[in-house]
Image (cartoon, rainbow, N blue to C red; front, top):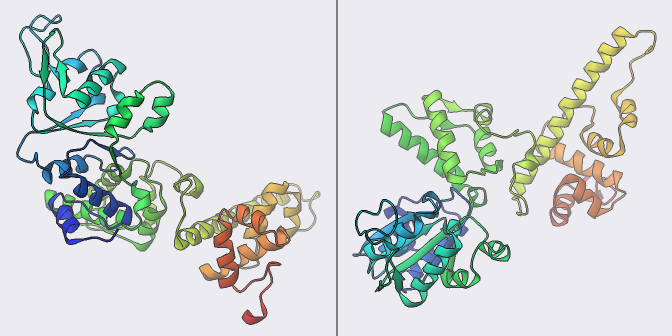
Length: 402
């Protein structure tokens, strides 16, 4: 979905930063469903910004002049959740010294946002289902049926269908809540939005505390794009504010950023979102990191051999080239090491990539499936690289590239 003027106004009104198609699609669905009085389920990872969407739905719907109440279902103890949502009568339980209205009564005519709806107890789910079906509810300790006219928008970071299978969430309630589903993309799936958000958070911090702002080097930006961001936008904001505090007015380097990330960046595979198609530039960066890391490991290995030779001069009479030592590697390790071995460090990323792909093709005797698996890329990407790098299936340059 392309960004319309209406979506641009929504982004500006709610200070939503980003241009990724998945984000634009989610905003567009919220705007389109807002005037239609249907229940909406907002799904997405924790910290991805789900809380903006019920506000958009309320603000652009017919109930915009009525109350909007947001309830975090996971933050209310199970023993009091029914009282909070539906109210209670005086003396209904110990401590109930007076009659109290619940959120469903307070928000009559308006909108209730139920965040972390999967945390609701099954008994409360049954009460909620009745509200959705008939608009009726009972206060705790009362036998008098009351009516309410509300719109419910729920949100969760849990796969509700799996919760239904495990008996933790009512199937009938799931289908009532999910009349319309809005899926909020994770930060890693939003591409360059991570850079835009990082700059916005840095500028906001600088303005708020009247401090010189920070900038991000090209290497730091590449690291941001590769990192998985398990905490999504919330985690990015936390990291940027720490950088803005401790590196006032400086350009943030890749190394300074990596020091604050909770995982070992060198293990790229664990940081990139699983099961997603990666961009060409991302794959190139990952391949380069792999080659560079293996070269460093080989250098360390050579140093260890030199030290061993010094200690046992009689056992090792002559320094063996590193290619000879590789034959003692286990088969799986050898496949990776051979990819990284060359007489010189490649001067360009393309040269390094060509050497890695050629070595993998030769090692697997042109088997495209095995080659793609060892390089951790798709077969489609391998086809493209073979063509772009001027190679044939044996790993040798094609005539057109010689």
